[in-house]
Length: 64
Length: 356
Image (cartoon, rainbow over all chains, first blue to last red; front, side, top):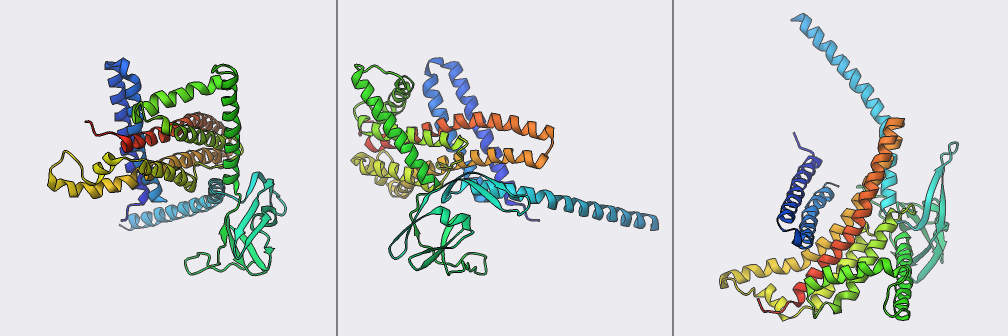
């Protein structure tokens, strides 16, 4: 049986979701430890989240 | 044995009939779904006229559009200009100095006087296409935002001059944003002494993307930053600025990476060279995909109202649309911020001095 493409995209999106969740957790932990550096941490977290997010979109558009 | 056989046959019959009725029902909802899908695709694509909404005549089944036409500019043995109202959403054939044009699914094709469109075996249109430089909906929106930005920021600059460099009116809103881009984006990523050169581009691209994103969320229903051609243009400018202003250290890091073993250097060069193109490519895809996905999600949720057609589903859809809209307002700002931030980082790589 052939697995539909959309299932693969769903798996990729689950993966990126976990990834972004871990980034958020890491950022929150880091801010908890170093509240003064929250600006720098947030910027770095947003950049990495944006990079991870790109993979999810690539998967979504590969399906279409 | 007989009993089980007849029972299984009976079960099969029930299953079949159930699946049959199910299929019938699905066919009915499919038409609504197809209609919604068509609407969404129509929305996310660029169009030759600015239609705000359309109504369907129940008796004749004809669609009536409300909006205004935009000029169509074609280059096909000379420049041809006419208003898009002549095309009438693909229903009419336009004659322009001996040639006939027809609109089909948002694209203009050259046809004969009857508007005949020929298809090949794959269902693709084989008619010739003239070079289309029309002022489309997206182009019109870009002009609108550019004009808005021009008048807004020149008047702000003037007001700063008149008020001894103190913000006034709209400047009180925009000054913190400009300061944020300078102090949080440009200076940390490019450096204190070189950031000034790039500030103009960073500010322009930030406000341009932000305003266009917000315009896309307005009921005008334009989808400019969710158009890959627009984001390609923006990413191309970043790419050109990065590579044209790059210094020797940048190119050295690409072709002959310092600090790694010699046998690794030729292996790293193609990867680094690929990275030069991947960076603006990811900029393009990120902005395009985020905005497009946001628009599609919003439209799909609005479409749920017409699929459910009851109070519970519609209210649920309304609540969801409200919250997704709130998130999209945040995303509009966030994507503009990320585009600016990543552009600044790339510029920073390009002008970094060799001192580490």
